[in-house]
Length: 193
Image 1 (cartoon, one colour):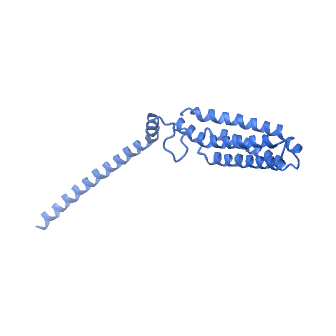
Image 2 (cartoon, rainbow, N blue to C red):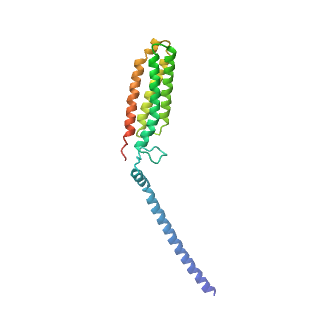
């Protein structure tokens, strides 16, 4: 009885070993298939974004889907009030530059505040990598104008204050050029690659 009992144990051990080998082989095969599937995830993700009208190269990190229209709309939402405020401040300066040093100084100080707030908004904006250098150039041009405008606001006379006008206009033209370049960069999706 012990011999037949012993031979039955051997059969169970052999059967258990076969089951263990088959399960291990199947597990290894599933892991290999899973790794193969995972390597194509990026391509499938990009295809899904493209099918949804998303531009993968426009999406800043952390955002799943950004369309050109979405990015443009978000940028305009920041730019429009900033430009309107700046235009109002420039008009206030133009109205007072020949009559009141205090009013002209207040208008220039408000201009500087608007310019710096716009720069801060642009610095926080999630520009895609392809557009970020253009945005950085705009921020730098606007900072240069803000610095010049702040210096102009410190003038001790209206004549001295007006002597800055041409340099501020040139700096403003540079900002306008950079604004146009940024708008074009945002509206033109970069090539996918």
